[in-house]
Amino acid sequence: MARYIFITGGVVSSLGKGIASAALGALLQARGYRVRLRKLDPYLNVDPGTMSPTQHGEVFVTDDGAETDLDLGHYERFTGRSANKQDNITTGRIYQGIIAKERRGDYLGGTVQVIPHVTDAIKEFVLDGNEDYDFVLCEIGGTVGDIEALPFFEAIRQLGNDLPRGGAIYVHLTLMPYIPTAGELKTKPTQHSVRELRAIGIAPDILLVRADRPIPKEERRKLSLFCNVRETAVIQALDVATIYDVPIAYHHEGLDTEVLAAFGIDPAPKPQLHRWHQVVDAIRNPEGEVTIAIVGKYTGLKDAYKSLIEALQHGGIANRTRVRLDWIEAEVFEQEDPAPYLERVNGILVPGGFGERGSEGKIHAARFARERQVPYFGICFGMQMAVIEAARSLAGIDKASSTEFGATEEPIVGLMTEWLKGNELEKRAAEGDLGGTMRLGSYKASLKDGSRIAEIYGDTEIVERHRHRYEVNRAYRERLEAAGMSFAGMSPDGLLPETVELPDHPWFIGVQYHPELKSRPFEPHPLFTSFIEAAVKRSRLV
Ligand code: GLN
Image (tube, rainbow, N blue to C red; front, side, top):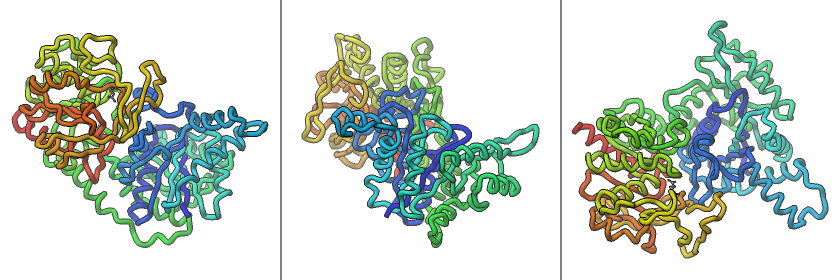
Protein backbone atom coordinates (compact mmCIF):
# COMPACT_ATOMS: atom_id res chain seq x y z
CA MET A 1 0.00 0.00 0.00
CA ALA A 2 1.18 3.52 -0.80
CA ARG A 3 2.61 5.63 1.98
CA TYR A 4 1.79 9.33 2.03
CA ILE A 5 4.06 12.32 2.54
CA PHE A 6 2.25 15.62 2.99
CA ILE A 7 4.35 18.69 2.32
CA THR A 8 3.26 22.06 3.68
CA GLY A 9 4.92 25.45 3.71
CA GLY A 10 5.21 28.12 6.37
CA VAL A 11 6.56 31.62 7.12
CA VAL A 12 6.60 32.95 3.55
CA SER A 13 5.64 31.75 0.08
CA SER A 14 8.16 31.14 -2.71
CA LEU A 15 10.39 28.92 -0.57
CA GLY A 16 10.60 26.37 -3.35
CA LYS A 17 8.15 23.83 -1.98
CA GLY A 18 7.68 22.42 -5.48
CA ILE A 19 11.39 21.79 -5.94
CA ALA A 20 11.74 20.47 -2.39
CA SER A 21 8.91 18.00 -3.05
CA ALA A 22 10.34 17.03 -6.44
CA ALA A 23 13.80 16.55 -4.91
CA LEU A 24 12.46 14.32 -2.14
CA GLY A 25 10.56 12.34 -4.76
CA ALA A 26 13.75 11.96 -6.77
CA LEU A 27 15.67 10.74 -3.71
CA LEU A 28 13.07 8.09 -2.92
CA GLN A 29 13.07 7.08 -6.56
CA ALA A 30 16.87 6.84 -6.46
CA ARG A 31 16.38 4.28 -3.70
CA GLY A 32 14.26 2.18 -6.00
CA TYR A 33 10.81 3.23 -4.81
CA ARG A 34 7.91 4.01 -7.15
CA VAL A 35 6.94 7.60 -6.51
CA ARG A 36 4.00 9.82 -7.44
CA LEU A 37 3.87 13.57 -6.81
CA ARG A 38 0.66 15.58 -6.63
CA LYS A 39 -0.28 19.17 -5.96
CA LEU A 40 -3.31 20.46 -4.07
CA ASP A 41 -3.97 24.12 -4.86
CA PRO A 42 -6.28 26.11 -2.58
CA TYR A 43 -7.39 28.79 -5.06
CA LEU A 44 -10.89 28.96 -6.54
CA ASN A 45 -9.96 28.77 -10.23
CA VAL A 46 -10.94 25.38 -11.63
CA ASP A 47 -7.44 25.16 -13.08
CA PRO A 48 -4.68 27.71 -13.74
CA GLY A 49 -5.50 27.76 -17.48
CA THR A 50 -7.23 31.13 -17.37
CA MET A 51 -4.73 32.75 -14.98
CA SER A 52 -2.25 35.36 -16.16
CA PRO A 53 1.28 34.02 -16.57
CA THR A 54 2.60 37.19 -14.94
CA GLN A 55 0.62 36.39 -11.82
CA HIS A 56 0.69 32.66 -11.60
CA GLY A 57 3.62 31.67 -13.77
CA GLU A 58 3.60 29.09 -16.51
CA VAL A 59 0.66 26.79 -17.09
CA PHE A 60 2.10 23.30 -17.34
CA VAL A 61 0.24 21.03 -19.78
CA THR A 62 0.15 17.28 -19.27
CA ASP A 63 -0.05 14.58 -21.96
CA ASP A 64 -3.74 14.08 -21.22
CA GLY A 65 -4.41 17.77 -21.78
CA ALA A 66 -4.75 19.16 -18.26
CA GLU A 67 -3.66 22.74 -17.61
CA THR A 68 -1.84 22.50 -14.31
CA ASP A 69 0.43 24.22 -11.82
CA LEU A 70 4.04 24.71 -12.86
CA ASP A 71 5.21 22.54 -9.97
CA LEU A 72 4.07 19.54 -12.00
CA GLY A 73 6.83 20.49 -14.42
CA HIS A 74 9.39 20.17 -11.62
CA TYR A 75 7.90 16.81 -10.65
CA GLU A 76 8.25 15.54 -14.21
CA ARG A 77 11.77 16.86 -14.66
CA PHE A 78 12.99 15.44 -11.36
CA THR A 79 11.36 12.00 -11.54
CA GLY A 80 10.84 11.43 -15.26
CA ARG A 81 7.26 10.31 -14.55
CA SER A 82 4.71 12.02 -16.81
CA ALA A 83 2.07 13.78 -14.74
CA ASN A 84 -1.63 13.59 -15.58
CA LYS A 85 -4.97 15.30 -14.94
CA GLN A 86 -5.26 13.60 -11.57
CA ASP A 87 -2.03 15.02 -10.20
CA ASN A 88 -3.30 18.54 -9.57
CA ILE A 89 -6.52 19.70 -7.99
CA THR A 90 -7.85 23.08 -6.93
CA THR A 91 -10.57 24.21 -4.56
CA GLY A 92 -12.47 25.34 -7.64
CA ARG A 93 -12.50 21.85 -9.13
CA ILE A 94 -13.49 20.25 -5.81
CA TYR A 95 -16.39 22.68 -5.48
CA GLN A 96 -17.39 22.25 -9.12
CA GLY A 97 -17.88 18.54 -8.47
CA ILE A 98 -19.73 19.07 -5.20
CA ILE A 99 -22.06 21.72 -6.61
CA ALA A 100 -22.88 19.55 -9.65
CA LYS A 101 -23.76 16.70 -7.27
CA GLU A 102 -25.87 19.02 -5.13
CA ARG A 103 -27.81 20.21 -8.19
CA ARG A 104 -28.45 16.61 -9.22
CA GLY A 105 -29.91 15.97 -5.78
CA ASP A 106 -27.24 13.43 -4.87
CA TYR A 107 -27.06 14.64 -1.27
CA LEU A 108 -30.69 13.55 -0.70
CA GLY A 109 -31.75 16.66 1.14
CA GLY A 110 -28.67 16.85 3.37
CA THR A 111 -26.88 20.10 4.17
CA VAL A 112 -23.67 20.30 2.14
CA GLN A 113 -20.74 21.53 4.27
CA VAL A 114 -17.00 22.07 4.17
CA ILE A 115 -16.63 19.30 6.74
CA PRO A 116 -17.37 16.57 5.75
CA HIS A 117 -18.27 17.11 2.10
CA VAL A 118 -15.36 19.23 0.90
CA THR A 119 -12.81 17.42 3.06
CA ASP A 120 -14.18 14.04 1.93
CA ALA A 121 -13.87 15.07 -1.71
CA ILE A 122 -10.25 16.13 -1.07
CA LYS A 123 -9.48 12.86 0.70
CA GLU A 124 -11.06 10.83 -2.06
CA PHE A 125 -8.91 12.67 -4.58
CA VAL A 126 -5.72 12.15 -2.55
CA LEU A 127 -6.31 8.41 -2.08
CA ASP A 128 -7.43 7.65 -5.62
CA GLY A 129 -5.33 5.73 -8.15
CA ASN A 130 -2.23 5.13 -6.03
CA GLU A 131 -2.10 1.32 -6.27
CA ASP A 132 1.12 1.27 -8.26
CA TYR A 133 3.13 3.54 -5.99
CA ASP A 134 5.22 3.09 -2.84
CA PHE A 135 5.16 6.77 -1.95
CA VAL A 136 2.66 9.48 -2.82
CA LEU A 137 3.92 12.99 -2.12
CA CYS A 138 1.18 15.62 -1.82
CA GLU A 139 2.25 19.21 -1.82
CA ILE A 140 -0.26 21.70 -0.41
CA GLY A 141 -0.06 25.05 -2.20
CA GLY A 142 0.05 28.29 -0.24
CA THR A 143 1.28 28.88 3.28
CA VAL A 144 -0.02 27.63 6.62
CA GLY A 145 -2.38 30.24 7.99
CA ASP A 146 -4.08 30.96 4.65
CA ILE A 147 -7.84 30.84 5.17
CA GLU A 148 -8.49 29.25 1.79
CA ALA A 149 -6.13 26.35 2.50
CA LEU A 150 -7.88 25.26 5.70
CA PRO A 151 -10.05 22.51 4.12
CA PHE A 152 -6.91 20.97 2.64
CA PHE A 153 -5.06 21.03 5.96
CA GLU A 154 -8.11 19.54 7.67
CA ALA A 155 -8.33 16.80 5.04
CA ILE A 156 -4.68 15.80 5.39
CA ARG A 157 -5.00 15.92 9.18
CA GLN A 158 -7.92 13.48 8.98
CA LEU A 159 -5.97 11.25 6.61
CA GLY A 160 -3.29 10.87 9.28
CA ASN A 161 -5.90 8.95 11.30
CA ASP A 162 -7.76 7.31 8.43
CA LEU A 163 -4.62 5.66 7.08
CA PRO A 164 -3.03 2.73 8.93
CA ARG A 165 -0.43 3.69 11.57
CA GLY A 166 2.78 4.70 9.86
CA GLY A 167 0.89 5.39 6.66
CA ALA A 168 1.52 9.14 6.48
CA ILE A 169 4.03 11.75 7.58
CA TYR A 170 4.11 15.54 7.46
CA VAL A 171 7.03 17.56 6.18
CA HIS A 172 6.95 21.31 6.84
CA LEU A 173 9.13 23.70 4.84
CA THR A 174 10.01 26.95 6.59
CA LEU A 175 12.50 29.79 6.54
CA MET A 176 15.08 30.97 9.04
CA PRO A 177 15.77 34.60 8.18
CA TYR A 178 19.21 36.05 8.89
CA ILE A 179 19.08 39.33 10.82
CA PRO A 180 22.30 41.21 10.04
CA THR A 181 22.16 43.56 13.04
CA ALA A 182 21.93 40.61 15.39
CA GLY A 183 24.22 38.48 13.25
CA GLU A 184 21.84 35.56 13.76
CA LEU A 185 19.51 33.18 12.00
CA LYS A 186 16.15 33.40 13.73
CA THR A 187 13.98 30.47 14.81
CA LYS A 188 10.88 32.40 15.84
CA PRO A 189 9.04 32.51 12.48
CA THR A 190 9.39 28.72 12.23
CA GLN A 191 8.16 28.32 15.80
CA HIS A 192 5.06 30.38 14.96
CA SER A 193 4.45 28.52 11.76
CA VAL A 194 4.62 25.13 13.51
CA ARG A 195 2.37 26.41 16.29
CA GLU A 196 -0.17 27.37 13.62
CA LEU A 197 0.05 23.87 12.13
CA ARG A 198 -0.32 22.20 15.50
CA ALA A 199 -3.35 24.37 16.30
CA ILE A 200 -5.12 22.72 13.38
CA GLY A 201 -4.02 19.30 14.51
CA ILE A 202 -0.95 18.61 12.39
CA ALA A 203 2.34 17.85 14.11
CA PRO A 204 5.14 17.89 11.55
CA ASP A 205 7.50 14.92 11.56
CA ILE A 206 10.21 16.72 9.66
CA LEU A 207 11.19 20.36 9.34
CA LEU A 208 12.94 21.37 6.17
CA VAL A 209 14.44 24.75 6.95
CA ARG A 210 15.56 27.13 4.23
CA ALA A 211 18.44 29.37 5.26
CA ASP A 212 21.09 31.38 3.44
CA ARG A 213 23.88 30.08 5.71
CA PRO A 214 24.48 26.96 7.83
CA ILE A 215 22.19 26.65 10.86
CA PRO A 216 24.27 26.42 14.07
CA LYS A 217 23.74 23.31 16.18
CA GLU A 218 22.32 25.38 19.02
CA GLU A 219 19.59 26.82 16.80
CA ARG A 220 18.70 23.39 15.51
CA ARG A 221 18.32 22.17 19.07
CA LYS A 222 16.09 25.13 19.77
CA LEU A 223 13.88 24.39 16.75
CA SER A 224 13.69 20.76 17.78
CA LEU A 225 12.67 21.69 21.32
CA PHE A 226 10.11 24.38 20.54
CA CYS A 227 8.62 22.70 17.49
CA ASN A 228 8.51 19.22 19.00
CA VAL A 229 10.50 17.64 16.18
CA ARG A 230 13.45 15.27 16.65
CA GLU A 231 16.78 17.03 16.31
CA THR A 232 17.81 14.77 13.42
CA ALA A 233 14.55 15.69 11.70
CA VAL A 234 15.46 19.37 11.56
CA ILE A 235 17.00 19.42 8.10
CA GLN A 236 18.77 22.49 6.83
CA ALA A 237 18.00 23.39 3.22
CA LEU A 238 20.69 25.80 2.10
CA ASP A 239 20.62 27.76 -1.15
CA VAL A 240 22.38 25.90 -3.97
CA ALA A 241 23.71 27.11 -7.32
CA THR A 242 21.44 24.95 -9.49
CA ILE A 243 18.11 23.30 -8.69
CA TYR A 244 19.53 20.00 -9.92
CA ASP A 245 21.86 20.07 -6.93
CA VAL A 246 18.93 20.00 -4.50
CA PRO A 247 18.46 16.20 -4.32
CA ILE A 248 22.18 15.72 -3.60
CA ALA A 249 22.19 18.52 -1.02
CA TYR A 250 19.12 17.15 0.76
CA HIS A 251 20.60 13.69 0.79
CA HIS A 252 23.74 15.06 2.48
CA GLU A 253 21.56 16.67 5.10
CA GLY A 254 19.82 13.35 5.73
CA LEU A 255 16.33 14.14 4.43
CA ASP A 256 15.62 10.82 2.74
CA THR A 257 17.06 8.83 5.66
CA GLU A 258 14.90 10.79 8.07
CA VAL A 259 11.76 10.32 5.95
CA LEU A 260 12.32 6.56 5.81
CA ALA A 261 13.03 6.50 9.56
CA ALA A 262 9.74 8.30 10.19
CA PHE A 263 7.99 5.44 8.38
CA GLY A 264 10.10 2.88 10.26
CA ILE A 265 11.91 1.78 7.09
CA ASP A 266 15.58 0.76 7.14
CA PRO A 267 17.41 3.42 5.08
CA ALA A 268 19.94 0.96 3.58
CA PRO A 269 21.05 0.74 0.81
CA LYS A 270 22.02 4.24 -0.21
CA PRO A 271 20.29 6.00 -3.14
CA GLN A 272 21.83 5.87 -6.62
CA LEU A 273 22.69 9.49 -7.29
CA HIS A 274 25.20 9.00 -10.07
CA ARG A 275 23.06 10.63 -12.80
CA TRP A 276 22.39 13.65 -10.60
CA HIS A 277 26.13 14.11 -10.07
CA GLN A 278 26.63 13.91 -13.83
CA VAL A 279 24.02 16.60 -14.53
CA VAL A 280 25.38 18.91 -11.86
CA ASP A 281 28.92 18.38 -13.13
CA ALA A 282 27.85 19.32 -16.70
CA ILE A 283 26.19 22.50 -15.39
CA ARG A 284 29.13 23.47 -13.17
CA ASN A 285 31.88 22.79 -15.67
CA PRO A 286 30.74 23.97 -19.09
CA GLU A 287 33.20 24.10 -21.96
CA GLY A 288 31.75 27.21 -23.54
CA GLU A 289 28.95 29.74 -23.34
CA VAL A 290 26.18 30.97 -25.63
CA THR A 291 23.68 33.78 -25.29
CA ILE A 292 20.08 33.25 -26.31
CA ALA A 293 17.71 36.19 -26.62
CA ILE A 294 14.18 35.41 -25.46
CA VAL A 295 11.82 37.89 -27.06
CA GLY A 296 8.60 37.63 -25.11
CA LYS A 297 6.08 39.63 -23.21
CA TYR A 298 6.03 38.18 -19.72
CA THR A 299 9.73 38.74 -19.21
CA GLY A 300 9.15 40.46 -15.85
CA LEU A 301 8.26 37.17 -14.20
CA LYS A 302 10.62 34.36 -15.10
CA ASP A 303 8.19 31.78 -13.67
CA ALA A 304 6.07 32.48 -16.76
CA TYR A 305 8.74 30.64 -18.76
CA LYS A 306 9.78 28.00 -16.23
CA SER A 307 9.88 24.93 -18.49
CA LEU A 308 11.45 26.93 -21.29
CA ILE A 309 14.32 28.09 -19.09
CA GLU A 310 14.89 24.53 -17.91
CA ALA A 311 14.71 23.09 -21.43
CA LEU A 312 17.32 25.60 -22.63
CA GLN A 313 19.53 24.58 -19.75
CA HIS A 314 19.04 20.92 -20.70
CA GLY A 315 20.14 21.82 -24.23
CA GLY A 316 23.20 23.38 -22.58
CA ILE A 317 23.87 20.22 -20.56
CA ALA A 318 23.75 18.14 -23.75
CA ASN A 319 26.32 20.47 -25.36
CA ARG A 320 28.32 21.08 -22.16
CA THR A 321 27.63 24.75 -22.69
CA ARG A 322 26.47 27.45 -20.33
CA VAL A 323 23.31 29.06 -21.72
CA ARG A 324 22.99 32.72 -20.83
CA LEU A 325 19.53 34.18 -21.33
CA ASP A 326 18.97 37.70 -22.52
CA TRP A 327 15.36 38.71 -21.79
CA ILE A 328 13.88 41.24 -24.17
CA GLU A 329 10.40 42.75 -24.03
CA ALA A 330 9.04 42.31 -27.56
CA GLU A 331 7.41 45.74 -27.56
CA VAL A 332 10.86 47.36 -27.54
CA PHE A 333 11.29 46.34 -31.20
CA GLU A 334 8.14 48.24 -32.13
CA GLN A 335 10.01 51.47 -31.29
CA GLU A 336 13.64 50.58 -31.71
CA ASP A 337 15.87 48.83 -34.23
CA PRO A 338 16.45 45.24 -33.01
CA ALA A 339 20.03 45.15 -34.31
CA PRO A 340 21.81 46.56 -31.23
CA TYR A 341 19.91 44.07 -29.06
CA LEU A 342 20.25 41.01 -31.26
CA GLU A 343 23.52 41.46 -33.12
CA ARG A 344 25.65 39.71 -30.57
CA VAL A 345 23.31 36.94 -29.44
CA ASN A 346 23.88 33.40 -30.67
CA GLY A 347 20.25 32.41 -30.96
CA ILE A 348 16.80 34.01 -30.84
CA LEU A 349 13.81 32.33 -29.28
CA VAL A 350 10.25 33.63 -29.47
CA PRO A 351 8.19 31.66 -26.94
CA GLY A 352 4.46 31.04 -26.52
CA GLY A 353 2.20 33.99 -25.89
CA PHE A 354 -1.28 35.35 -26.18
CA GLY A 355 -2.78 38.54 -27.59
CA GLU A 356 -1.69 41.31 -29.88
CA ARG A 357 0.54 43.30 -27.56
CA GLY A 358 4.16 42.75 -28.54
CA SER A 359 3.30 40.69 -31.63
CA GLU A 360 4.85 43.16 -34.12
CA GLY A 361 8.02 43.18 -32.00
CA LYS A 362 8.19 39.41 -32.23
CA ILE A 363 7.71 39.62 -35.99
CA HIS A 364 10.69 42.05 -36.12
CA ALA A 365 12.75 39.56 -34.11
CA ALA A 366 11.86 36.74 -36.54
CA ARG A 367 12.80 38.96 -39.48
CA PHE A 368 16.14 39.85 -37.93
CA ALA A 369 16.90 36.16 -37.30
CA ARG A 370 15.92 35.20 -40.85
CA GLU A 371 17.84 37.98 -42.59
CA ARG A 372 20.95 37.79 -40.41
CA GLN A 373 21.10 33.99 -40.36
CA VAL A 374 20.83 33.83 -36.56
CA PRO A 375 19.41 30.53 -35.24
CA TYR A 376 15.70 31.07 -34.62
CA PHE A 377 13.40 28.92 -32.54
CA GLY A 378 9.70 29.87 -32.62
CA ILE A 379 7.49 28.08 -30.15
CA CYS A 380 3.72 28.17 -30.66
CA PHE A 381 3.05 31.93 -30.89
CA GLY A 382 6.71 32.23 -31.93
CA MET A 383 6.03 29.95 -34.90
CA GLN A 384 2.85 31.82 -35.81
CA MET A 385 4.72 35.16 -35.84
CA ALA A 386 7.55 33.67 -37.94
CA VAL A 387 5.00 32.47 -40.51
CA ILE A 388 3.35 35.91 -40.62
CA GLU A 389 6.79 37.43 -41.11
CA ALA A 390 7.59 35.06 -43.98
CA ALA A 391 4.19 35.72 -45.54
CA ARG A 392 4.82 39.47 -45.50
CA SER A 393 8.48 39.53 -46.45
CA LEU A 394 8.90 36.45 -48.66
CA ALA A 395 5.45 35.82 -50.16
CA GLY A 396 4.49 39.50 -50.51
CA ILE A 397 1.29 39.15 -48.49
CA ASP A 398 1.53 42.59 -46.90
CA LYS A 399 -1.57 42.33 -44.77
CA ALA A 400 -0.69 38.93 -43.30
CA SER A 401 -2.02 38.68 -39.76
CA SER A 402 -3.72 36.45 -37.19
CA THR A 403 -7.44 36.46 -36.39
CA GLU A 404 -6.32 36.48 -32.76
CA PHE A 405 -5.77 40.23 -33.28
CA GLY A 406 -9.16 40.87 -34.91
CA ALA A 407 -10.71 40.47 -38.34
CA THR A 408 -8.13 40.37 -41.16
CA GLU A 409 -8.12 40.07 -44.94
CA GLU A 410 -5.18 37.67 -44.83
CA PRO A 411 -5.69 35.19 -41.97
CA ILE A 412 -2.31 33.47 -42.11
CA VAL A 413 -3.11 32.31 -38.59
CA GLY A 414 -6.75 31.59 -37.82
CA LEU A 415 -9.07 30.30 -35.14
CA MET A 416 -9.71 26.59 -35.30
CA THR A 417 -13.15 25.46 -34.29
CA GLU A 418 -12.87 21.80 -35.31
CA TRP A 419 -10.02 19.32 -35.31
CA LEU A 420 -9.34 15.62 -34.83
CA LYS A 421 -7.92 14.09 -31.66
CA GLY A 422 -7.16 10.53 -32.71
CA ASN A 423 -10.45 9.54 -34.32
CA GLU A 424 -12.55 11.98 -32.36
CA LEU A 425 -13.72 15.31 -33.66
CA GLU A 426 -13.17 18.15 -31.17
CA LYS A 427 -15.34 21.25 -31.60
CA ARG A 428 -15.18 24.73 -30.15
CA ALA A 429 -17.43 27.74 -30.58
CA ALA A 430 -15.68 31.02 -31.43
CA GLU A 431 -17.47 32.79 -28.59
CA GLY A 432 -17.28 29.83 -26.15
CA ASP A 433 -15.66 29.65 -22.69
CA LEU A 434 -11.97 30.49 -22.48
CA GLY A 435 -11.19 27.90 -19.78
CA GLY A 436 -10.08 24.44 -20.95
CA THR A 437 -11.10 24.95 -24.57
CA MET A 438 -7.79 25.17 -26.40
CA ARG A 439 -6.17 22.37 -28.38
CA LEU A 440 -4.57 20.80 -25.33
CA GLY A 441 -2.24 17.93 -24.57
CA SER A 442 -0.51 15.33 -26.71
CA TYR A 443 -1.09 15.14 -30.45
CA LYS A 444 0.81 13.23 -33.11
CA ALA A 445 2.56 14.96 -35.97
CA SER A 446 4.12 13.57 -39.14
CA LEU A 447 7.44 15.03 -40.25
CA LYS A 448 8.55 15.14 -43.85
CA ASP A 449 11.28 12.64 -44.61
CA GLY A 450 14.55 14.47 -45.18
CA SER A 451 13.47 17.65 -43.43
CA ARG A 452 15.78 19.30 -40.90
CA ILE A 453 13.32 18.61 -38.09
CA ALA A 454 12.95 14.90 -38.93
CA GLU A 455 16.72 14.65 -38.87
CA ILE A 456 16.81 16.33 -35.43
CA TYR A 457 14.21 13.96 -33.99
CA GLY A 458 15.67 10.98 -35.84
CA ASP A 459 12.06 10.07 -36.60
CA THR A 460 9.12 11.11 -38.77
CA GLU A 461 6.37 10.37 -36.24
CA ILE A 462 6.37 12.45 -33.09
CA VAL A 463 4.02 13.20 -30.18
CA GLU A 464 4.13 16.62 -28.56
CA ARG A 465 2.02 18.68 -26.15
CA HIS A 466 -0.12 21.54 -27.37
CA ARG A 467 -1.82 24.58 -25.86
CA HIS A 468 -3.27 27.03 -28.36
CA ARG A 469 -6.48 28.20 -29.93
CA TYR A 470 -5.16 29.39 -33.32
CA GLU A 471 -3.44 27.48 -36.14
CA VAL A 472 -1.36 28.38 -39.16
CA ASN A 473 -3.82 28.41 -42.05
CA ARG A 474 -2.90 25.66 -44.51
CA ALA A 475 -4.67 27.55 -47.31
CA TYR A 476 -1.47 29.62 -47.57
CA ARG A 477 0.81 26.60 -47.62
CA GLU A 478 1.58 26.57 -51.34
CA ARG A 479 2.39 30.25 -51.50
CA LEU A 480 4.61 30.08 -48.46
CA GLU A 481 6.42 26.95 -49.65
CA ALA A 482 7.02 28.58 -53.04
CA ALA A 483 8.51 31.52 -51.12
CA GLY A 484 10.94 29.26 -49.23
CA MET A 485 9.23 28.26 -45.98
CA SER A 486 8.74 24.52 -45.73
CA PHE A 487 5.77 23.04 -43.84
CA ALA A 488 7.84 20.10 -42.66
CA GLY A 489 5.47 18.80 -40.00
CA MET A 490 1.70 18.34 -40.33
CA SER A 491 -1.00 16.73 -38.19
CA PRO A 492 -1.53 13.10 -39.31
CA ASP A 493 -4.68 14.09 -41.25
CA GLY A 494 -2.62 16.70 -43.11
CA LEU A 495 -4.82 19.60 -42.02
CA LEU A 496 -2.86 21.39 -39.32
CA PRO A 497 0.67 22.73 -39.82
CA GLU A 498 2.77 21.53 -36.88
CA THR A 499 6.28 22.66 -37.81
CA VAL A 500 7.84 25.02 -40.33
CA GLU A 501 11.46 25.56 -41.32
CA LEU A 502 13.62 27.57 -43.68
CA PRO A 503 15.80 25.02 -45.51
CA ASP A 504 18.42 27.58 -46.57
CA HIS A 505 18.93 29.09 -43.13
CA PRO A 506 21.43 27.68 -40.62
CA TRP A 507 18.64 26.91 -38.10
CA PHE A 508 15.18 28.40 -38.42
CA ILE A 509 12.41 26.24 -36.97
CA GLY A 510 8.93 26.97 -35.72
CA VAL A 511 6.78 24.46 -33.87
CA GLN A 512 3.10 24.79 -33.03
CA TYR A 513 3.52 22.70 -29.86
CA HIS A 514 5.50 23.15 -26.65
CA PRO A 515 8.60 20.93 -26.75
CA GLU A 516 9.90 22.53 -23.54
CA LEU A 517 7.25 20.66 -21.57
CA LYS A 518 8.81 17.30 -22.36
CA SER A 519 12.47 18.15 -21.87
CA ARG A 520 14.22 16.60 -18.87
CA PRO A 521 17.70 16.99 -17.48
CA PHE A 522 18.47 13.34 -18.19
CA GLU A 523 16.79 13.41 -21.59
CA PRO A 524 17.20 16.90 -23.07
CA HIS A 525 14.66 17.52 -25.82
CA PRO A 526 16.32 17.01 -29.24
CA LEU A 527 15.10 20.40 -30.51
CA PHE A 528 16.74 22.22 -27.61
CA THR A 529 19.92 20.17 -27.94
CA SER A 530 20.05 21.01 -31.64
CA PHE A 531 19.17 24.69 -31.15
CA ILE A 532 21.96 25.15 -28.60
CA GLU A 533 24.35 23.29 -30.89
CA ALA A 534 23.44 25.74 -33.67
CA ALA A 535 24.01 28.63 -31.24
CA VAL A 536 27.45 27.23 -30.37
CA LYS A 537 28.31 27.15 -34.09
CA ARG A 538 27.06 30.70 -34.49
CA SER A 539 29.11 31.84 -31.48
CA ARG A 540 32.23 30.72 -33.33
CA LEU A 541 31.32 33.02 -36.22
CA VAL A 542 30.43 36.24 -34.39
N1 GLN B 1 -2.08 32.72 -28.79
C1 GLN B 1 -1.74 31.66 -29.67
C2 GLN B 1 -2.87 30.66 -29.84
O1 GLN B 1 -3.75 30.58 -29.01
C3 GLN B 1 -0.48 30.95 -29.22
C4 GLN B 1 -0.62 30.24 -27.94
C5 GLN B 1 0.69 29.81 -27.35
O2 GLN B 1 1.73 30.35 -27.70
N2 GLN B 1 0.66 28.88 -26.41
O3 GLN B 1 -2.90 29.95 -30.80
